[in-house]
Image (tube, rainbow, N blue to C red; front, side):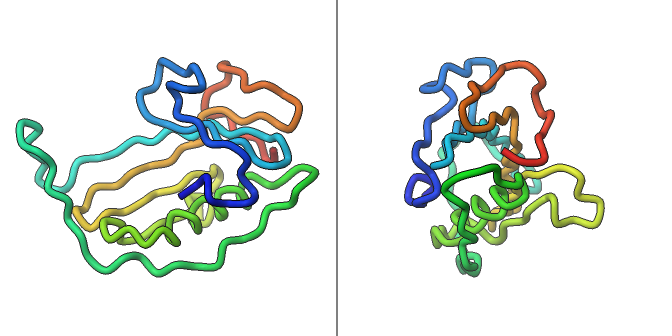
Length: 151
């Protein structure tokens, strides 16, 4: 769903990108050349889950899609705008397991960017920008979770 955006030129898993100390995530390269390494962390549904059994997806009405904000093809982009773009792409996928998507920066105390994906199962998947790099820079594996204002 992320690779379908014209504002995104490449999506790699952490493994493909050589990030080995975190199990789940994607390195997203924007058409400007800026990069974000987004770590995905999932909570268990309320009441936990039996890991010895195959997961039974809980579905419901898909979250309501919103207009995907465009990202410019050049220049620096506010991280909050990238956050909104990614959230809208996830909402627009129409996945019946997803109940809602929230941009963390839109909370009253929202000082950081990130995405919370609430599932019908009551589990939550957190998308947290782990590393960011502006166009022309390589992702540095130092300064984890130190978010830039723009990329």
